[in-house]
Length: 216
Image (tube, one colour):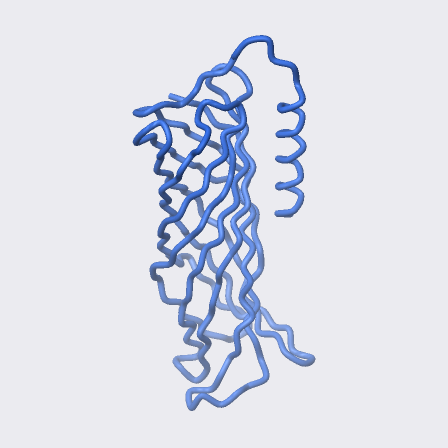
């Protein structure tokens, strides 16, 4: 799904770049402006960490965390013409499975609130295609968890960090198309069945988004 979103964004970008423009018909975001962006976001975890016993012995099982695609909102404030701060809001739903050998069992479902705040640098804020790079922090909150198949799973909330790259592509007036990719690094301790089993889980998701923004 994240490849599809990125491809769609690149196609849109290419069509805008190729289109003839006789005069600037879009509005540039400047210091003090906001861009509010509605996105479709794919959150894809790369978790594949070992599940061990309380004594640290291997069980032969690993943690698998499913992907999810959900709507999200991005709020970008321009501190200067070239430097902006973005916060994203949204919640995603993920299934956690224990896998290994012939075992593939759902053990938990959870909602995750992963707000990410990044500081962005924009080298070409006047351009119709305005790329940016960013870095920042996130805080993962797990809520409304549901245990599966007799397992009792507890996940620790906590801080992580993120890198980001993307572009705002001006369409007309205050409207833009946004393509955004974030890599988030986040580690959580999973305690299973009161500590009988444990896993040090590196979620480390890719967060790939395509959306429509408006300048205010």
